[in-house]
Amino acid sequence: MKITVALVPMLIAVAGCQNFNSSESSDSEQSAVSFMEKYDFNHDGLVSMEEFDGGFKSFVEMDLNRDTFIAASEVTEL
Image (cartoon, rainbow, N blue to C red; front, side, top):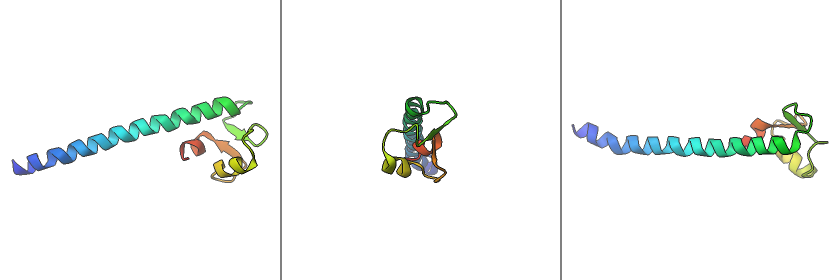
């Protein structure tokens, strides 16, 4: 019985963290969707330097894998 009582606060804390992470995830996913809607003019799932109007330095910082394109997955990692 003491073990069960001791686990309850820990389970509540873990559940709270999972809820926090899922809302954080949906915010970053929404940001990625908004970014792609704004910049991915040819709808290929990638934003090229030609499509991006945020400047070269910002583009390079966002292109995490250095493939000269920004993918939605790179936006969610920021």
